[in-house]
Length: 99
Image (cartoon, rainbow, N blue to C red; front, side, top):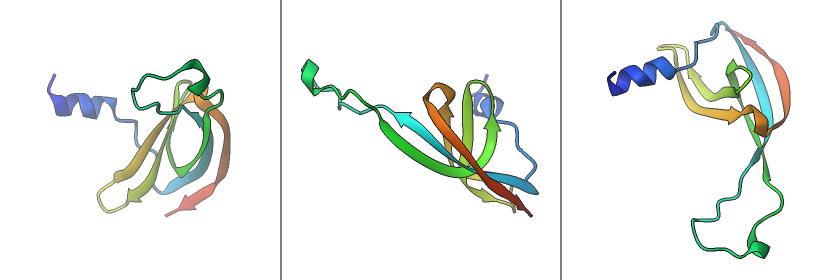
């Protein structure tokens, strides 16, 4: 399978762009320890809590996919973020945009 074909196959199904839902997701992000050697007392005990907002593209049992931007003229997404469900603390459904 060609590289681009794999990309297209893994792309989330497009929602109805005439009715987009805006969400904010609070989720746990791991700390980047920069690949360096660390001592036990240097490992953080808590994760960073991240807030990410955008247009809901897809939600299933495994992940939430949101996009920061959408281009109505050529039906493309920008700033796509995939958040794994086990890391999600809370989802606020802000509202719909009817275009």
